[in-house]
Every structure is written in C-alpha cells, then in structure tokens.
Length: 486
Length: 100
Figure (cartoon, each protein chain N blue to C red):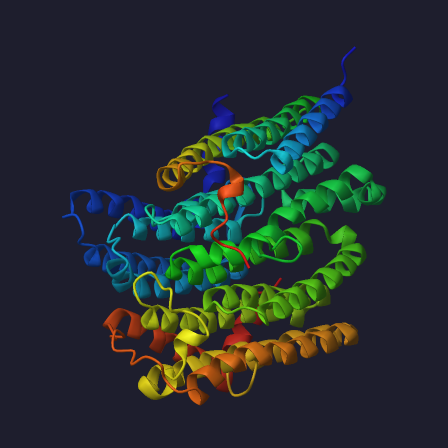
C-alpha cells in the first residue's frame, strides 16, 4: 500500500497539466470575484480573464520543445498539445474581447460568463494533451458542460434556451456513443491508454479486424466527429450557432473545434494506426460529404450567422482532408489551418457583432445592404475575412487550403484535392453575395447604431493582422506547425 | 454460470433501449433519462470488463462517468427549467424557433 502511494505521487508531475491548472485556478478566483462584484459590472472580470489567458499562454509556451508526461502516462504536454492550446487561448481571448460590449447591449451583463469561457478553454487544453481516453473524455466534458451553459446563456430568450437545450441533448447523446466506444475498446485491449491500444494491436494484428474493436473505434469517432461538426453529425451546428450568443458562436467554431481535432488526430494517428487504410477511406468519404453538405446548404441561407455555421461545417471538411492524407504535410496543415480559421472566422463574427442591433434580427443578407458605403472600414475588414474564408490570396485562408490540399496530392489523393478546390469555388458564391450586398446595393439604413468600442476593435485588429501575416509570410508559423506534428 | 459475455449482452441491450428512447420520445425529461440509461450501460460494460481483464482502469473510469453525468444533469435540468419558463413546455417538438 505504502509503495503504491509513493509510486502514484512520483507519477503525478504537475508540470504536465500546469497550463490548464493555472487557467482553472484563475477561473475559480474570478467566479468569487464576480460574486463580490456589483451586479451589472463585468468589465473588470473581462480584463482579468484576459490576464489569465496571457499568463496561461506563457506557462503553456514554456512547454515548447520540453515535453512533459504525467499522471502515469495519461497526459502528455508536447509541442502538439502546446500548439493546440495556443489556438484555444487565442480563440478565448478574442471571444472575451468581443463579448463585453455585446453582453451590455443584449442586456445580460453577467460576469460568470467569463470564468465559463476559461473553464471551456481548460477543457479544450486537456483534450489536446490527453493520451488516455479517460483524460480526453474528461476534457471533452469540461468543455461541453461549460459550453452548454454558454450556448443557453441568455436565459430569458427562447432562442438561446433552445440552442442550449439542443446542444445539450445532442452533445450528451454523442457522449454516450463515445463512451460506449471507449468501453468496447477497453473490452478488447484491456486498456484505455492510446499508446496501450496501439501496442496491443501491434502485438495481436488479428485483433484489429475484431468486430468489437472496429465497432468501438467507430463509436469513438462518432463522438469526435460530432464535436467537429462533420457531416452526417452536423445537424446541431446551424441551430446552435444561430441561437447562441454571437461571441460564443465564434468561440465554438474555433476553440472547441480545434480541440476536438487535436483529440481526433491523437486517437486515430497514434491509437488506431492499425486501421489506417480503413480509416483513410472513411475520412475520404466524410471529408467530401462534409464540405459538400456545408457549402451547398450555405448557398440558400439568408441569416448570416446560419450561413457562417454552414461555412464552418465546410471548413471542418477541408481540415479533414489533412487527416485523409495522413502524412507530415497533411497533419501539420491541420494545425496551421485551425489557427488560420480561428483568426478569419472570429474576425468575421466580430464584425457581425458590431453591426448587429439588440436582438440581432438585422444580421441577414438584406440587413447589411450598403454597409460598405456607410461604414467603409468595417466593410473593408469584413471583405478581408471573407476573402480569407474563400481561400483567395494574399490571405491566410489561401495558404491554409493550399497547404492542406498539397498534403493530399503528395499522398496521392488527387481527386480529393480536386473536389476540395471545386467546393471552394462553390463557396465563392455565398461569400461573394455578402460582398455584393455590401457594395452594390443601395443602403436602406444608415447604420447609425454602429459604434466602435475599443475591445471589439482590438479583437478585429488582431484577427486582421493574423489573417494578413499568415497569408503573406506564413513560413515561420508553418515551421512551428511542422515541429508540432507527430 | 454468468460470464462477462452476459454482462456485455445486457449492456448492449440497455444501450440500444437508451438510444431508441432518445430517438423516439418527445418529452425532454424522458429523453434525458434515456441518455442516463445509455451512460449506465457503459458503466456496466466497464465494470464487467474490468473484473474480467483484472485491472482497475475500468472501475476508475466509471467514477468519472458518474461524476460527469451528475454535472450534466445539473446543467441539463437548469436549461430545461429556463426553457419551460419561457414557453411552458418541455416537449421537443416545441424546440422549433431555429430551423432552416
């Protein structure tokens, strides 16, 4: 008994969870701060959350090139985890910056909002660094439970309630599948550690063809594919994205999605390596299905948040192309693409937050007619983000797509790359339609309610700089993404 | 003699009942109970397998699943109450504000 305790203590290594630990402590302290704050004053909690994210960012960066394993091999803070943690931290930071004014406009200045974002981020970081299905599951749930609350945060608005409930039911349902998958894999291999599963399959190659193993692997994938909103598990995305508070929509499409990609990559590339040929065939179909479904349904959308939701589905499809390629370029391209997507998508949402009225009923195609003349700067900025979402040079979206498709071509998936490029061509239509509305329609309204507030402006500036920097001089970040790959 | 296979079969049946219930029921609370049945069938699998293969990982996993299920219940019921206050219903057919 004494020995067991000794061994357990030696195995802990708090260094391996330090970033998320710091973030959680900050989150709990901020919860207390909000209890003792005057009702309706949230700005100081917002800025303290930014401080928390910056501190966590530095703690996290200290793990670069200095991998730490801990908790008996169930957590591994390597470059891969650090890269994804940084994406999540950037996403959370941009979200908090664009939230403060938004919450006041919508009449919900409740400061518990910010600690919840911090907890979500901590969960995302656990998912990225988990090497045991147990840790990944816990990270996923910390992330999801906080996001359910955030999606339904405007509790007196039926729309937000409905978004929260839909997300909750479908999320819990998919968690059930994920868990049953873990249980079946455990039944076959006798372990929940990702490398343990891989080692078992290597030692018993026949087991990879075992029905129970395949069923377990597939059920596990359902859980992750749900979180990254891949077709055919995307049905919740448009409803939840439309009903949730807009900054949370932006956050959901960037941070949690990146974390789910991280966990999916670690589980498939490391754990289910034995099923590589079957999995690449499966991902091929899913990638094509996801981008096609996302792009074609987006064509008929009038509501801008809903259109961006479908666009986010299609972008998950592009990123999955890197998983099909299953080579160094493809995998590091996913990391790069997730970072790029964070900047361009959150930037677009930040502009939408600025032009929305209370209740946001004017965020439709007709509602932004003539925006480019009345608010020229916002028009130009939104144009940059849309260019990047389309994948046109000199923006980051172009480099990201180019990099991902070149990985697929290198692995011999020419047709997949062709279908991806064709899909991007389809997406031009609905992104360009937004620009046509902005620049070629006469303004029906004067947009006098649009006021630029400093925090949101900062988040837009950061996003613009990110999109242009990664689009014009991507070399150094691509290098980092390569170092972060497996 | 009851072997691990019997437990696996039982949990598969429970999981299917839960899935079927989620897909067919209309009342949000009943759907939530069906999800709980799914999670508990997973717990049963974990415990039976843990006993069978002779390590404790599965049993520890069950503690986490139960904790998470409790947290989910708290959040889920709160969301349902918020929805009920606004629309006097917890029927999933009334989740119809958002659609294409």
